Image (cartoon, rainbow, N blue to C red):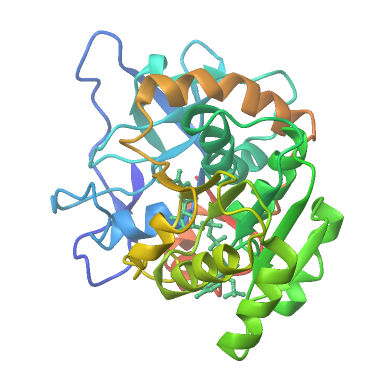
Length: 318
Ligand SMILES: NC(=O)c1ccc[n+]([C@@H]2O[C@H](COP(=O)([O-])OP(=O)(O)OC[C@H]3O[C@@H](n4cnc5c(N)ncnc54)[C@H](OP(=O)(O)O)[C@@H]3O)[C@@H](O)[C@H]2O)c1
């Protein structure tokens, strides 16, 4: 079969022949892949930088996708850590790590949205006891996951939803997704801190896609401007687009009732992820959550890898 194959972590995957999949266990199911999303997680899998990387090559990347098996059912699946990922004509899935999609599901739309949507959906349901009426700041809101986080916070009953990002043009589009306020993170750090302090000092929950210096600076800005520092502030670390480490000052944890938790593979168990999939897939299929998608043929995988990142999530279609 044809697949996107990584032979070196220094180079993008290439479209080439790869051995046909062989089911390893009795429960395994070979599926024809219809759509596989090119998420940041897949890029870090393909360049060996993800924290779950085992350095094993050759590797077919792709952590999730939509496919159809011999039983004729359309499924969204999540793959375990494997060298045969979703970016292939066929892959092997464990049906227990999949859900049968509702009739009328668009494979490309589902493959585009599930991974970025899951980040905040799971964080707000499995990592904290989120309450309707709470206020949320989405830090790094201009990407796919951030835009979906705004929609998911709204669906979850959030009151104020503040969207913060560095790209003013994309930020201006976020009120249409449900943001009640925006904060531009671009510019003089002191001015940015003042903006954050004014707009987001009283939030209850931060969904943080940035980490790095901007997260530490935002933490200080919010805590410093907070009227009641004993009011709980829960910071959920979800992504690290701005840096893998953040210089969080010790005083931030003493001077305010700040709790920092992470949400991702490991801190959320596979069982917990699987429990959330049906409702999330229904929300996407029903149009309650929208992510823009750009389908590209699997054969164009090299072009997909070097395509400029836009707001549309690239989805490879074998
Ligand atoms: N833990 C989980 O469950 C989970 C699940 C899914 C995704 N994630 C993580 O969440 C993050 C976002 O994923 P995504 O799917 O939204 O990626 P994406 O669609 O590529 O969006 C990334 C966004 O970040 C912005 N950005 C880049 N550097 C920035 C910086 N220094 N400051 C502010 N904004 C910056 C980019 O916009 P501009 O360049 O225009 O500013 C872009 O809009 C990634 O780290 C991903 O691995 C985590």
